[in-house]
Length: 355
Image 1 (cartoon, rainbow, N blue to C red):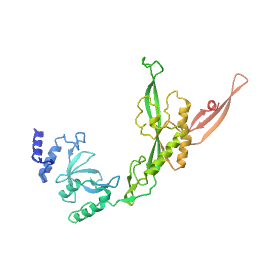
Image 2: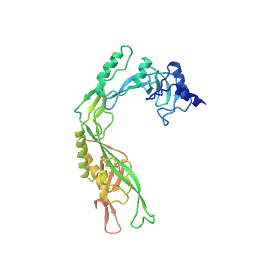
Image 3: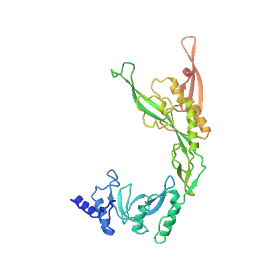
Image 4: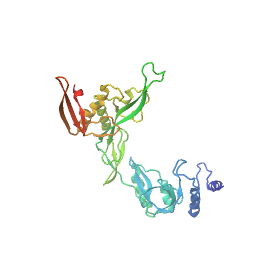
């Protein structure tokens, strides 16, 4: 019955025109209606999967223009604690706290109709900021209107190359000839050593894949800015890395043979080294070790930032190494020689490797 009553009230405010909209009431009538809907306990934000809503007292809201990745600006809101809020453009604006689901009346410094109109405003492209800012300034003579930011455009900023090394593990079943029908496969783990190229621009919070974007937002003491990316240099960095990695056994992800579909993250790599499995030949392991020992130092010397995740299967010890020898007598007239290496608190017998 409660839902039927609410649906009846909503139907009362509906407009049956070609472009259906609701002619909402104003003042206490609107507040009571929204509060009644929220207090059913079944209201959610945006869609059925959104956060559950709860009614809360009015909250003071500050409106401001938020600068996007390409310099476009959208009106945003926050409370006195700096928490982001979403404004609902009713005749009298309401807020939704996306973190808690709290809903209430939004109190701003401007007239309710003006705040609701701004909450409905589309994003302002960077090219239109000056014109829109001028129009808002004229309106602001009657009411305080948040000012658009002046966004500087920066060209000629050099991209910094970043190499991310990571591994992706997958369980596979291998069958010897004639064993497939008998179901006597062998469970093994395959680790794919992956390398991904990214670029960073000074002042930008996030990194990009080469060629991902034409512009990216940056923030510093001078205020918001938009950096014009250099896709030609980005492509050159990626190509230089791919060629260097192939000299150490790296391959394009699409060129490798997979027993089953590769795990997530492999096809997104720029280079994949031969996967590691139990019983693999030493040359499969040597490709990755050779790249870490020679390729990575060479890239760092050229100015690359290299980030190695814990999932990367190869480790190179770059600290001090100590060697020692020992002679072990035997029952014959001969003796055995042991060549020991100590690194990072561990001792290794390197005699068999040397032999």
